Length: 160
Image 1 (tube, rainbow, N blue to C red):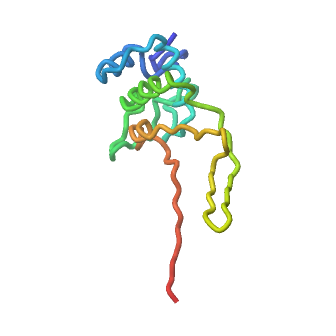
Image 2 (cartoon, rainbow, N blue to C red; image 1 turned 120 degrees about the vertical axis):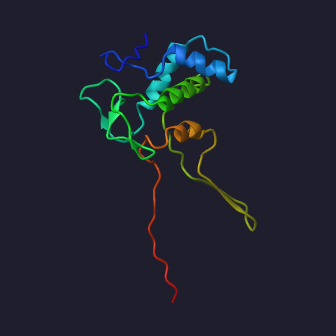
Image 3 (cartoon, helix red, strand yellow; image 1 turned 135 degrees about the vertical axis):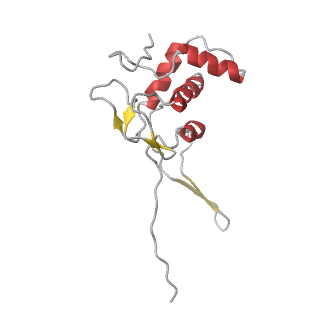
């Protein structure tokens, strides 16, 4: 059973079945039969994200609500679940119909093929392996709420 009340010790979902129904209706997507299970799978994915700020209360079951969040330059209330988060959970629930959102991570060895005198091709994935799925639309929606997964390189170039 989904519990969407953040004050409940059984709180286990940001989005309700009604939220998912509204989401799919507005987008002309067919209603999934197993909405609760899909929302829980989506919640499992969201639980693995590194969020900005900190939990609003010690011991709360989920990462949100959070305190110390600044969104678009404004302090975000520490007792509110962002609507973007509910939408992201619904988006992920729809994706969960296609398969597991959190497949086991496998690193593939580099594979190289060389045709003498012609071309060398290097692949970052072995035969039979699959790339890990990403959800750029979900992460774009959550931009400003998550800790960036990017990196930066500082370099100085000088001409001699």
